[in-house]
Length: 276
Image (cartoon, rainbow, N blue to C red; front, top):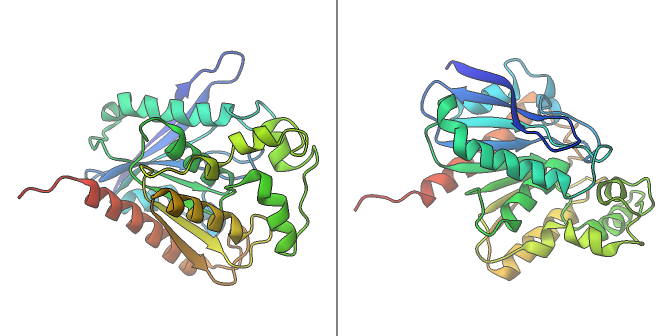
């Protein structure tokens, strides 16, 4: 299948900051949904060219392969924590969703269906996008090894055998602009678990059982919060995998990707009205 790639599409120009852009991968056959893809990097590293884990160096790229499965993929840059503190990152992702809602047809994406997929810090932003808008702009969400409760993250890291950090140099502190113990309110306001509600779109939470950087308890906390609120979350455990799944080769990584794409496509199909 031929995939058309639209690179360097500027979707927002935040005053005082660099223009923020996306790359859009459009399959030749009509896409079943448009997927907003959000890279990881602890909110301070990474770019829209980064696929997840072992898929980072694939050729054809991760994005092209996902497009060949039936999703148009918009891979987004967003402002990193060294450029601006939260909620700037969420504002960028929301701006991208608004831009694509208006302009997708001009790039050959006819479907109105929208889903989100994020890894690590990008999963956090995908979850925040889905949970905080008055009407969610997405129909389903996939999050890989996602920070979901920033106040609890350092404790979960310690419990998993890692070294939790609540100081000013931690990823979370750099995101919110202050050490967590000084501003727990800001950490709470940037945590997806706070915003779980009954009308949330369905979530697939994919997490390695050996992750001590963002422990599996973080996905468990989000699944518990969504379930308690009346939402839907499926927890997909990757046995023996640590953060970013370095233990997985290409074949095993591809299997997790296929499950993730399948979940998104299934949820879109279920949400579509059917003729009687």
